[in-house]
Image (cartoon, rainbow, N blue to C red; front, side, top):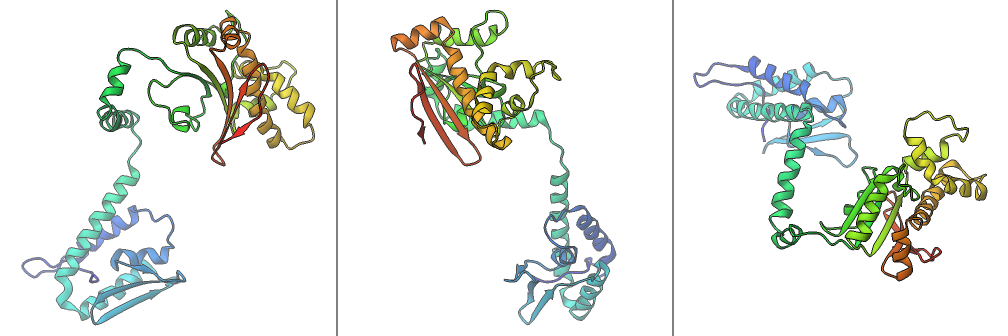
Length: 331
């Protein structure tokens, strides 16, 4: 790799200023998130580079008989670096043709990187690209699976999970299409039977149990749940500051009451962690207020399970309701 400074045209004339201006412009546009300013300049004109063991220098071998070591350049400016390189190339005049090719290459790379960094997020393109990837890597590689799904579904699980973008149950539990009938809402809550107030949830449970014949209903809580944090934070004076959220999370007020009674002196974060699990138990108990759920549990055709996903530590807990809560099995 050689250092570069100027562009030499075929007729021998110099076009150094034009090339350097282009390189300078590209350098200013390009973002170096971790390198000090004094180092950035040397990277444009001297590369490939190697970071020394102590991080104090960049080293570049430009010719077999020439080695240039750049240590910390302190307050050296962009212009100082250019002057030093100009002097070098004056002494090595026969390298100008190669230098011209190198500077054009690095300029193009910097401009491309700058363009990529400044590219705005396109939500439509993201969805299109996502579907193309899914179709190519999953749909078209599993014709038997999707052929069966075209005929109908018979999932073994109904899952209540939080709407939190970090806890998609299909990813966390590696569910495949057709494995689980999923309902997601704020804080993965199951309200008690109510034909008017919570008809949407009731319809989902009824369909899963009576029509899909699921064998398991799993309610999965998770760490750092914003809904539970809200439940633990909202005052109990009846003055709501939101239109929907407070009324919804109050479904699990019994969990909050239990946590405060048992760990009133604990840190707020610890209380939230306990409530995340207790709210799952409240939802499991609420499931028994649905006649068709209770009937399935009594007959042994339906099992109710609680789960807790800790995405901070990468762990999952699972327990089962059998007219009471069984011991927790850590996975």
